[in-house]
Image 1 (spheres, helix red, strand yellow):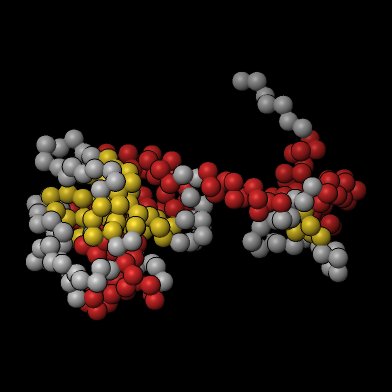
Image 2 (image 1 turned 180 degrees about the vertical axis):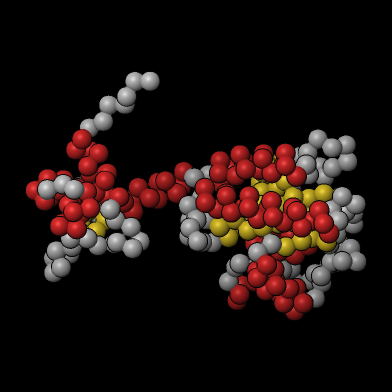
Length: 254
């Protein structure tokens, strides 16, 4: 295989930028040259060019260098191009194949949860759903897992004024519902125990974006006769790991 042509000065510029991190936000010229094994005049020339273009800035008092404001604009471009579906679809495919149940990617919209992506298993008895379908958030695992990570003062905004009971397991008491949300957050996953449709159970885990916010969830839904306690324990592990993988793809760091 033919080697890729590389430009030494650009290679060195990239290595200089990579010297900066959460632990090393500011560095002196000598610190950078020592780390890279380059003489100070070479490093200074490259840094001066990066500084001219706004990729590096310098504190006038300490003379230390740090990453420049120019990166903010590029960061926004990268984040905006990170479509949640692009990040999630490969993971959803793997989860569906592994669990052999319907898998959903969901988000909140007012008091509803909306499915924005899905994969259905090949079993004869399965949960068939529609992308764009809306369900009352308080009745679903997806809705509950997203709501529990929102601002505590705004949780009531995600609940309808009157909470209808869809099944005998639907939680209609607002105080009880909010109390259970704290338990859900501590566990890092939640279960819809036939709360919207009798005979269907669902397991959901949160997806964190690059800011550490939860706007989406990953879940799997199946008939209750297949979703027994032992099976749910297995699914919880798979769904949580998959949601974590999507979170990392979106730039989330714990």
